[in-house]
Image 1 (tube, rainbow, N blue to C red):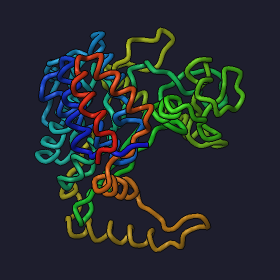
Image 2 (tube, helix red, strand yellow; image 1 turned 60 degrees about the vertical axis):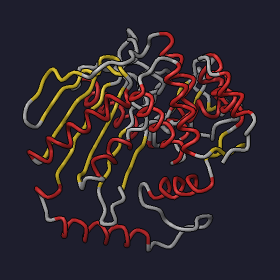
Image 3 (cartoon, helix red, strand yellow; image 1 turned 180 degrees about the vertical axis):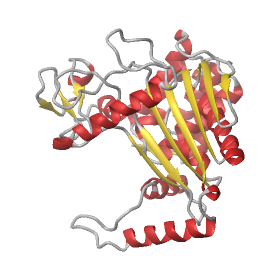
Length: 358
């Protein structure tokens, strides 16, 4: 395991994306998003995705240097066509649009379709929370990436369909909740697979419905992720099903169906201006009381304290900004090999001479 300073890692990924054909603006937005996710400990949506993204650029799976287009709009709603561009670029612009509309009209809803992988959706809800707004974002894959078995079923029928909710707090930090509707996002399974490690029990079944901890059963043998909830997995299944409708059907991206389409994200973004419902003083007082009440709970055996949503990720980010981002050497080698294939051999050699970077 090596440690890399966040800014150094971001600069390296920016150079790599630009070498693969991305514009400077695209490279900075996407690289910053991936590094921020890694800083927060969300490896599944972090720099582990770099080889996947570069391959998508090289094969045309993502369209470079494209501009999102609004093709339906009212004062409080919009439908954004991403033009098959980078999800992080498209979704950042869509959330900026939703924020502006909510500040004007009190509440706004924006849908997005036709874009590449949107990444960690908490990044978008936090954009709103940092402006004193509440945001809800949910995403499906337009019917693709079916990796989750429905409750009581045996075969893949749904995507991991995550949802994020973020709210502002008085100290300026977002209270941010971000989960997949499956037990774990596919990217976490990918992380274990890339490192050659077993996943935790309760995540996967193999193609015959038997519990397994081997990620090869998922990627190589037709296994599936389980819906969130364990024995109450009907809750995660129901959540995934409704997100497929709200993010897929409402956006026009499409829902899961037998004819598996080309992957394309469908998102629903809802932004609420708190001041249209209650004074910020009252809101902050009530939220602060809730946080204090929950954190006063005595910790269970094996736990040091109770954390509220987003708190652990923030602590992890602060630690990694001070001490560097720990990266598995196998993942780092894959990123270096991708850089070499994109013509950055000199940059790779420069890093190889400093493989204990901080």
